[in-house]
Image 1 (cartoon, rainbow, N blue to C red):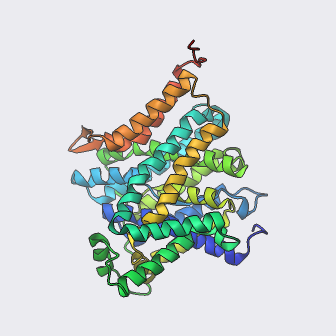
Image 2: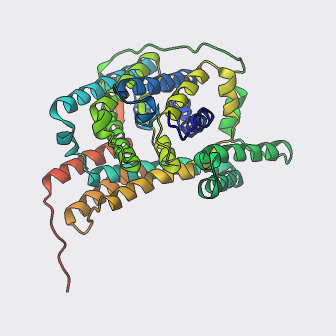
Length: 426
């Protein structure tokens, strides 16, 4: 463990990372119909698997890559398409398992070809816009979660800013946790003293259905395999692999540790793939390196991996504890929304910083075109009209594949276009 961090502080930071991932992680099963308990076990055990696989001899656990594997929003669209076409959820999780196998194929290619050759296809001019897109695309979720009670979201946001800027010691490294605690206390006062409704209709319904047993075994769902659902789910893996690489680049640059080379991109992708296979096997959404937690790591400047490992342990335990999970459901979405302002904004800001730190010359028409086209494709498909391609009896939502398509186009443009100095205008 990092000597600068006590065990108590590491435990609190693990709890903070749990809260950072919780809202988005449980949102995926709530929307798709998968089990929340199974999802928590999936992301928790999957994160632990990741850290087991990426650990190398001679490196302590604290020196591992500080990531948490949460529920993929990219695959959420694929799940909805599969079930919307009349297929069972198990067909979708079968597709998720196959996607995890593809992770391992890519990891083997990197292992044999060398990370340098692979990273030539993913330079900063491609990865930075990818990160910016991820942050910007998450932004509407922060607004929608905050909309029901804007004052509560604002209280949470202000508490986080005060802790992050002026906080000392423990307060400095746990700003998100401090904000959520302050926001929840304010919510309790509003709800029970002032009589103000702090929960939206959907959240109130979840609280009413909450399971208040102390311990309960979730119902796991084995995957089934059918060709059309697999074809529907497969394209989404390109978005999550791009997100994985982008997160590794961010963490490497922010921490000063080159995680691309040590423990190596092949090893981290393999860890992500094994976690995805496991999650597909038990009936959980696909795994992905969570940008919310990456944003929190860059905010606190604590790159010790132990808090992320503990967050995985906490999540897995919550999966077997309906009582605790149901209690966390009470935390108003507006509080999580207020925290998301910082988390999601930090992701986009880090992407911009990568462009600056690497001195990417946007006066070079090649770089300018790559960034411009990627941003327009990613944002245009995400927020523009729905575009679908029929596959069998289902429709593949191209508009939900904005990041994946933007990454592919960015790679192609980087290979095809030639660099040029900007023309001087007299």
